[in-house]
Image: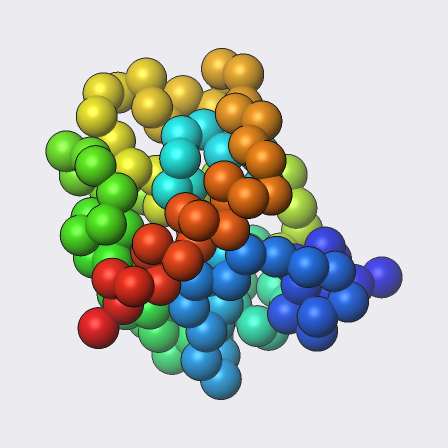
Length: 131
């Protein structure tokens, strides 16, 4: 069965996409820790990050860097944190989280509930920072 991320990649379900190329896609987390929380996903469906082909893993890091720089330019934060947990969805994904404190990347705290309009505006802002 395709993961929810594969369904986003295939446009079977909607997402607020901030960046995409042939191998990777980045979109807003719909249950973010903070505003601007983005997930970066390889288009190949692999469950565990260290099972990725080395070239795809390297590309994922470089693509994540581009997205993180756009977040850093457009979302008020001290820096952009990165986390790979891999337990929630069986498809590799990198969390890019705008940070102003250590608590901003605490995955046990309650998630934000943003409106579709808020998500769209945040995605548009981040897209505007992509070089």
